[in-house]
Image 1 (cartoon, rainbow, N blue to C red):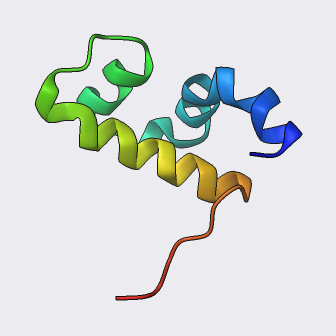
Image 2 (cartoon, one colour):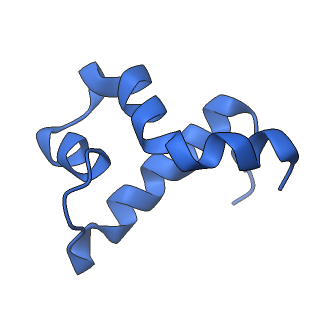
Length: 65
């Protein structure tokens, strides 16, 4: 993890929400705003985190199958 990512990480939910709010479902918005995550929602939260990392250039989407 690079230094810039470490600085950005504490606020990734807020930043992602600002970037993607119009594209997100009500459930996704609630999760990013801090609602407790139910066990079946972990993958939803994780996929948003992964998307944020790709947008920021911290992770590249794998095209391998």
